[in-house]
Length: 484
Image 1 (cartoon, rainbow, N blue to C red):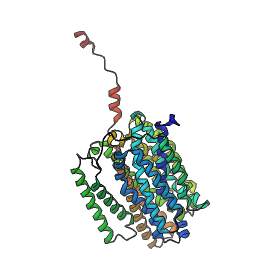
Image 2 (cartoon, one colour):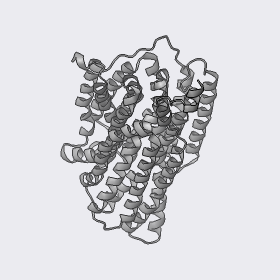
Image 3 (cartoon, rainbow, N blue to C red):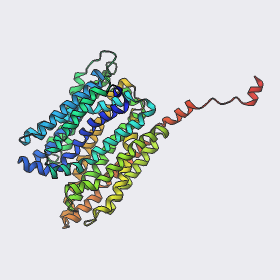
Image 4 (cartoon, rainbow, N blue to C red):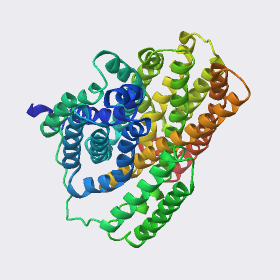
């Protein structure tokens, strides 16, 4: 096993195992909600907290975890996150009641927050710049596969061995990843002693929790005064956090503002949030349409989405390589165009009695789009980030990703419920009303992706500089040579 120590590809496999589990658990639980309600005797509100508790803990702590990786070494934090996540998965699988399950899910979110930002940091550290795009392609492939395969894998597990196994399946994966972490991942340590910004940690954690909770639970509480007060408090703490960070820029802040001097990092951080909103804007209403209108089982609905996962998984590494060679801007624009075309096609095909197989070409196009987006987006974000800021950059990038998911879920949930109620009020049947609602909700991800395309136009093309640096010096002109 010694020959695999610090081998970049062995490190990438190990990181991908942990990263896959954390993203899978964001989506796999949705398909098991009815089983958990009946198995635990829980209310719908309690069961929804099984979803929310994980996302809130992950969103609130991810910036802090990225900085902790800079302070104590990314391998240490990655291993700690794996251990916490795996133990919490056992707790989820054996939970005797709804309260215990919610508590275990919150702990799972803590473990996911500890390990997630370390993945990008370690990839930047172990891969040379020339191969980083391909590595990020594999990493992006894992991200897309985990996000899109959750409903499929969850449906299979719930239908065959029961809902508890959506958590217990993490245990062997987590143990394998933990063993590989100490066998192959290098222990990259900071060269000097660092400070820890406790005030910044408390402010950022509280601000992210208030904002994420308010956005995620706003619809449940009818957007009452309490929710708006919580959002206002979160915004105020976010402003206080930024002011505090401005005063600490010379004393190792949680968010080094120097990161945002890099136009590509700033643009890609905005894009990752927009893409997260768009993905939720498609997957959530489309999954409900497949089950509630077409009457597909959880497994069949998941299988309709499976081609998208397979194409994304196949395309990801090639997209990363193309981004290294020709620049990420054009690969990203092609991916955004494909994803938009797939969403529009799904909306146009959807009818109260559409056959499930009619959606396969459109889902293939969305998979092609995701595959062309995820890897170049991560590669361009981290391409020029100095190694000593990689943890902070990864923390910021992943926080925006999670906040985008929360905003996307809140926005599409509010739009879905409001529009469906309006359609049903006109006397339409549920199938006709939901289909019309799906056509309306498709506008949200299309507009968001158009904004993402505008952001991509801001990218600087690194390949020009590379070509200029590697070009041979021009031969002197004949007249100049004769004069010499």
